[in-house]
Length: 175
Length: 278
Image (cartoon, rainbow over all chains, first blue to last red; front, side, top):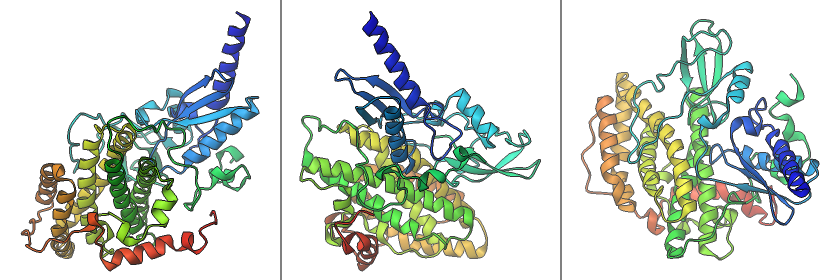
């Protein structure tokens, strides 16, 4: 019983340490907020394994995240640390938590709407303006905003402009 | 601004080799920590060849897109093209890593990207064509991304779970690439007299390269032709007549001199000091 409890406490400590690591490109979010930390588990050999999933295949931040998780777990007292990558199922912006969405908005970055629903078979073409969902300006709150570019300073962000307060802002784009 | 808010501050800190963001050599295997066992019943040579061809298409296209940096017509577009190139580079890294594992001769992504000669590359000719004007860029991107999206979508059912997973992630990214290109084709095709003239010229030059795409992945033809027809109709552009001269040969290692020039630049630093990590 004691060892079970100790085991649970150790798992909780490892999970908390890994979950608190910040995203290098969106530092207001932890990896848990972003939804890229899939699992933290204690292994039979006494080591700890954290499982991460990449946001975009070319995201250069993944190596940084992996190193940061490794360092955080070592700081938390785990000597034998493994960080695994999981490609499937792929990450989607739907996995950003409610807390993560709130933190994004507070930092002036509009959170994503619902990710496009993926059905079997060929992907339909989109020729018109893309997302019909209303994106509120994170600065003044107006729903009257427009996309200026779907590609921003990092792979995960789009550029928008508020028609009401005229300020440009970024949005985490749906994927 | 607190330290935590400064995106680039962590780059300056010393904490290990994995923190470099620029692309060089000697990075951690992009499939590090992924279960990479080959499923039984899979032809490893076939998987190697498929991954290598898909990786070469992506790497060479990414390099051409990167050449638009500082040359695009507007800043947003430069950022967009660089982003699209970065997605393709990410796909290339995973596919090279998978090709190396399936091949089983100890070649990693660096060996495959930096230390093969042009005749060993299997990319389609379209990918290596030198950049022209912006009309040429968006037509090339429309053809390439429509084809690669169709192919990736079909590969999501591949027997190899790693290739299937890479393809599935690619579908989400390529959907953005194709839509971006298609929207530009419509805007320029149905734009001014000058933009329409440039679009017609770009289409006339690039249209024949479709044949090589369909020869490489015949099951993509129906979908891609349908997508192209939709885009051209919306753009008020006519599809050029299919010419009898159909360039090709990329999948057999027959390339134009343009690939040699591209690879000479791409591989120059790695080859100048093969032992160095940068």
